[in-house]
Amino acid sequence: MSAGNPKNPKISLRDFRPQISRIERRLFLKQGLSLGALTMLSGCTLKDDDAVDKLLWAMSRWNDRVQAAIFDPAKLARTYSEGDITEPFPFNAYYEQPMAPVIYGPDYQLELGGLISDKRPWRIERLRELPQTSQITQHICVEGWSAIGKWGGVAFKTFLERIGADTTAKYVGFKCADRYSTSIDMPSALHPQTLLTLDFPGQPGETKYGFPVKVRVPTKLGFKNPKYVTEIFVTNDNPGGYWENMGYNWFSGS
Amino acid sequence: MIGAIYKRLEKDRRNQMTIKGPNLQRSDPKLSDRIIHPLFVRITHWINALAVFIMIMSGLKIYNASPIYPLQFPPDITLGGWLAGALAWHFAGMWLLAINGIAYLVYGVLSGHFWRSLIRFQPMAAYRNIRLELKRLILHGTGEYNPVQRVLYTAVIWIVILLVFSGLTMWKPVQFQSLAHFFGGYDQARKIHFFAMLGLALFTLIHVSIAMAVKGTIESMFTGRLAQKPPKKTGAPK
Ligand code: HEM
Image (cartoon, rainbow over all chains, first blue to last red; front, side, top):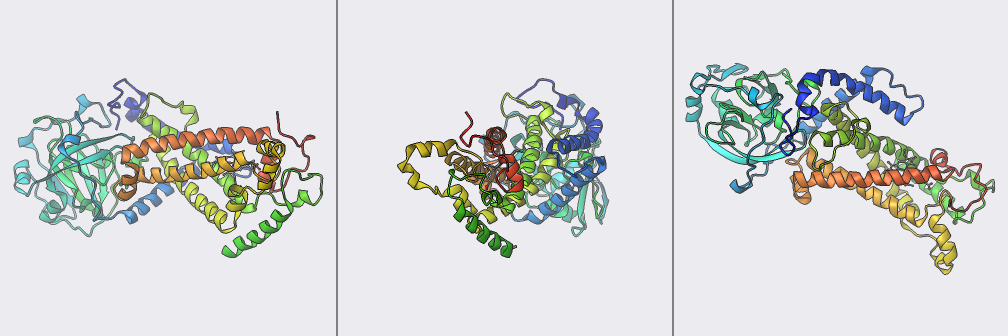
């Protein structure tokens, strides 16, 4: 999230977002006050900070429900050709690029948890034995930029079925090596284009795009596509996520 | 609700019969009782003004997160504090804008308000008198919109519609992919959304300046009636 705009490599305030986001969180409300003053609504006292904040959060939860209703499991994201691929693919995380975790493949294990019948961890070689597929889709960031990339791996639905995940459960959660986390709804997890990614954009051997395992969800905004995934769990309690807990819309579907 | 709309329709039609043009005498006690802005239009207008301010100010903050032009907006004219806050405002405000906008459009069509007040040039006969027509062009605040106002108001309604649909495209480029196809994809929709916003901001600037310059218009947009104490000269501001 906080990487500089690829078109504008200058240092910007955005680069320090993780540090200041908590302070800014409170500004949510102050802005509400000035708006109240601005519109001079008679009899409207937006003095209670929490009221504006609560309203915005309630609207965001309402938007979660609307997006879940709009979501059509059969609608596919547009796919592109090799020539459309964005080079170099932008790196983006809540920290700067040198901080990105580098995982040693042979040591890696994907842990499983929650409503899954076979919770034995997975190694890369075993994931490679499952049927592989790839697709070229557009990655859209919540910030407004987009990039086209190619991702390959195992259809996430195939993987969920293979591990005996309870696909009637509501959520799939992800924990990552960079202490990032996110979660998605089960219908999006079962979408035919949702991919347990093992092949990434960039040069062979490049790890910054999420090696060894990323979950690519072309029907969701970029921050709902976790990289360096170390644990996948299935649950009926919304696990939230790193950005979601700070105020970004949870569903964030495309 | 439909019943209420038809009631309004009748009332408007009766009002319309007595308001003929700019040559009305505002001192006429009967005229000061006439409703020149229907209640429904007044309510939706002010809700819309609030929604537009929320949408533009939060939108500028969202734009700043990843500018498409070498141009950033000063944080002071933005809303939300940071990107997540701005997005929360924007996606809450869009409901206000859309529901209120749909109500206004439905009312405008069903009541005949659009036809009477925005589309039809009532005094076509006035073309016979060029001096009168020139006067009409700049007259404002007389209970009837002049041709420039009609064109601007009609244009801004379409701009808002364009904003809503290009916005929906960016919100759901996969689910609303036929819309996305129409707008030429997500990135193209972003540019269209941006320029439509500039158009809306420009309209608002001109619109509010004129409204403030012509005494009594803002008051009548609240009361619905012509301002009680008109300026000495009914002519146009110089
Ligand atoms: C707070 C700022 C605003 C003020 C003070 C204001 C004031 C007014 C006034 C006084 C009128 C009546 C004009 C007359 O009687 O000649 C009017 C009509 C109108 N305004 Fe605004 N306005 C504001 C914001 C907006 C915005 C943001 C829009 C954007 C869409 C807008 C769209 C319109 C339209 C379409 C009409 C015609 C309404 C109808 O009769 O259907 N206004 N406004």
